[in-house]
Length: 114
Image (cartoon, rainbow, N blue to C red; front, side, top):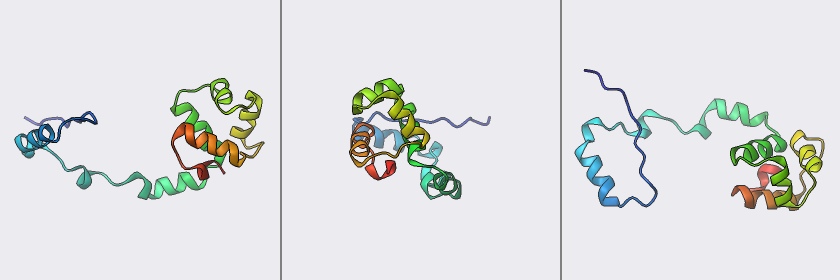
């Protein structure tokens, strides 16, 4: 009988002894992720997509990934909604101060937004 692969994730604070125990008990069934997958950031597809992205694209993607509305994010960084919208569409550059504020909110390097 062929088994379907499943994904198992451990919570961040799972004790190491539990993880080692599971790996030891089920070693015949575990696929080493490093053998199966490659680092997304090292792929040609990522490089191609990233080369076409502008700071406003990153801003919109991070905002949506964090489930923030333009209104919510504009309030957090202290700008008007239409100003934020202009930054997302590339009609207005993202200032260094706004890039630092956004980087703090999204926990990324400010250079992403400049």
